[in-house]
Amino acid sequence: MSVPKYRVQNADAIRKSLRRVRMLSRFLDSAFRIPIIGKRIGWDGIIGLIPGIGDAASLMLSLGIIREAWKLGLPRTKLLLMLAIVGLDSLVGAVPVLGDVFDVAFKANQKNAEIIIDHLRREGHDVSTAEEIAAMD
Image (cartoon, rainbow, N blue to C red):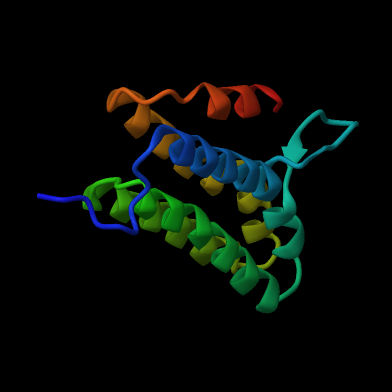
């Protein structure tokens, strides 16, 4: 059985895809440190403050990570799990105030990035680039 041409196949392309996943997850979930409490927040929590439009924009960006997972060939069960995580984040995130606190604490995109990294590690791929980016948090 041949690998579909849309799937990432070589090590360099996998590293580039992992880099995009980690950078997007960091951008959305932990781009800024709040000095007083030492917690990190990302653009997901910030743009989620804009009623309706912010939650929709955040959802679209989060789906970009799932698209990368699909291109990397993750199995359907993991893709469905990732969709469920983003769905929960979007559903609860739509609730005023409570949803914004949930967005900051839940970090759906980092959870999904870890699912991708764990899968590729188990498949024997080099995930050191992704781990280096994760260490920046």
